[in-house]
Each structure stands twice: as structure tokens, then as C-alpha cells.
Figure 1 (tube, rainbow, N blue to C red):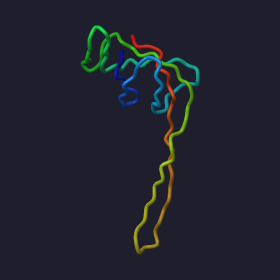
Figure 2: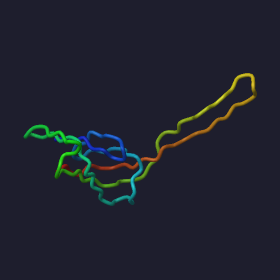
Figure 3: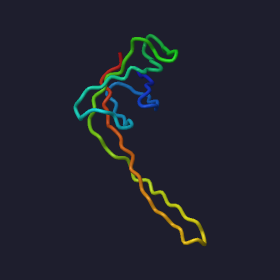
Figure 4: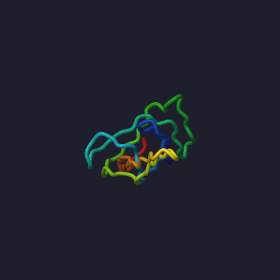
Amino acid sequence: MYAIVDIAGKQFKVAKDQYIYAPRLEGNAGEAVNFDRVLLVSDDAGTRIGTPTVQGVTVSAKILEHVKGDKVTVFKKKRRKGYAVKNGHRQQYTKVLIEGIG
């Protein structure tokens, strides 16, 4: 059984007991969260596609920790002008454990 869920504007294919790294969510480690924007559910009975969401289905999950992604280096340069700028960025994510679909 799996579901496709919209979390903070991004779509994730999730299954029970799976870890995902979603964009940073509100809440502390150990708290439970529910995602109600389920776009598709597939199980033994078949596949249900939402218009735009599947009614009555939620995905329950638990926040494990807040982490940062890999560093991305942004380098800008204009040749022959003496202009060079180097910046970095680390995206913040939340590690989430999917506890159930239903």
C-alpha cells in the first residue's frame, strides 16, 4: 500500500514505516502530524485517484528531527571586472516517519 501526498507544495510517494525528508515543518521532534492532502492511494482493493484529493484519507506521521541538507555553493563572477562573490546555502528539512495510511 502506498500513497502520493502533497507536503508543503511537494509531492512524495510514501508507504508505511518509510522515512522521508520533507521541507521544514512546524513542530518539535516526537510530535505527530497528519497530512490530509492525499492525491492518490493504492492498496489491494485498487487505486483511487483524487479530484484533486482523495476524500477521507489521511497519512499519519511522526517528526523525528530537523536537519539541514548538503551545502550548495553559489559563485558569481564577471570576467575582466574584478567581481567575484561566493555564497553558500543549506536547506532545512524535517525527517519524518510515516506511521500509517488510512
